[in-house]
Image (tube, rainbow, N blue to C red; front, side):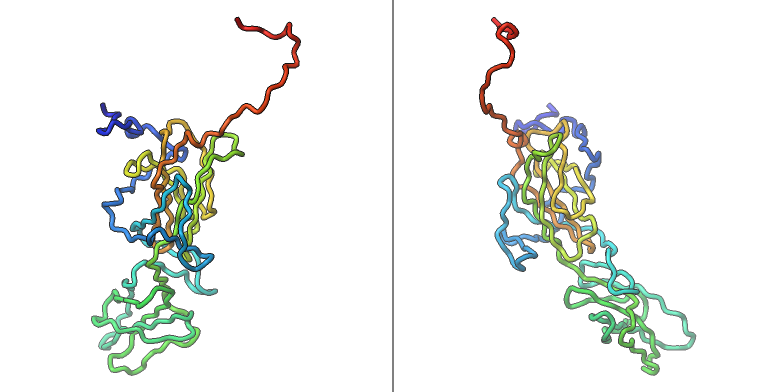
Length: 303
């Protein structure tokens, strides 16, 4: 039977495509974690917090696990600028990258292509290196993460008319080197008692100096290694999302939190234990007994 797995469990969705979440969007780029090379942003159950500056034990909801995974994504343009009048930086997640450049043709002149760099917004400059072949691109490797301003200049091969950027001169290009993924985790999932319809209140924490403006997406599946459906995407890092439960959900679901930064780093947190939707139903109890206001003649007695 195509609706039953080898271990006897029920396949969900039964036909593989029956369920459509409220957003009507399915994560088509998801591949099994084992097939992707990722850097762990978890260290023995410790979770970094911006408030205390160091690791602390992760206090997860009983039905939410602790996993921090990253995945590759293309670099993105930074959402903010450096200083007034300067271009927004380009974000990269590697300490080695290429700078493309163009040089006006000067007939008969032998020239050197030099790279100058600043780390303090253009107040001071230092000569970073020379392009050995004098042709684009310029291969750059920096020692540490952070913001770099770069300017490429051409000068005579004999060193005459050497050009040195002046203090306060803006860089031709700003590069933010950010190799570290965000820190992110699901913190709790509970039924929203104030909602008019059944809703799950999903809470998370996400920290990074270079998060995108709307960096958060949430996915669900009936199995940790199953097909993932996006239930919310491009969320602001508000720390909470109320998800309206719709028809067709399995009795148990897993949630997956994905958070992206401007450099293309991605943090992922998948619950280790399923969320049992039956456990999240509101409890109903009889709280008392009182007499009916109707007369005995108006009460219908069932034999």
